[in-house]
Image 1 (cartoon, rainbow, N blue to C red):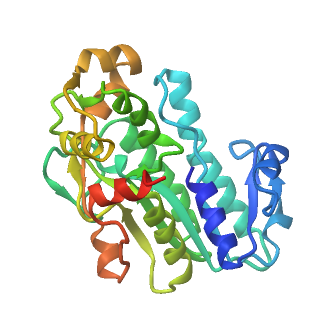
Image 2: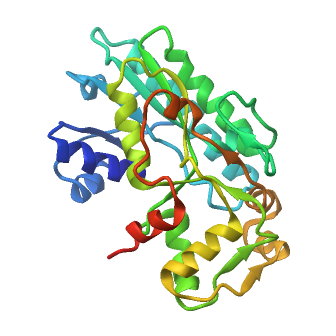
Length: 292
């Protein structure tokens, strides 16, 4: 979702984009304007020729966490991030002419469940699988600190009606059976897809930007507020509640507990460094995303 939107934005600006994919033939069919190279990220380094004349690298690789967290799934989720990022950094380190910057994805799952406490980039890592994955993911990216400028982007819940959380919510809400998850009091730190992409490009371009950035809108909301705002935009009632036991049945206990937890995350470093969010408030952001 993010990679596709980022490619579109870069190509619209006139940039040349090189993509690394497990299935370059399929990727080429989806976006023929990108130059695609094959890469099995958890098994090997990407090909050196993919980096010729490349100015910056954005690392968005990682298997979806939206699945039951069996031991095998957890291993794949971790290796698709940690080992893939390590292999990417190793490839960059072996180049005679290196890119100037690596912008590497992470997630606000790094912080763990903080209830309604405000969280920013200075908050230490939490506990649990999502936090452990993010920590190891970031450590792999920081292997490049002596090679080039490194920026870690901890993304929140990226809102895009074509994929991800918002797409999953649309169908039940449109038919009037949408509702809150659990108590509804857990914070959901969201970001409009345009601001996610905008922050990635901003981090690529600005030499003063290093270290960690939270990619979340400045005004996080609770799950209840998100549900009400979506119902209002769609002109549908929000009457139901998805009980915790139902989440456990669908997702499995560990992932369900993560979904019921929350983080009230602020993008403090991004705003301090001068990034301006185009969509800081939830309801106008939803109206923009669903205007078509």
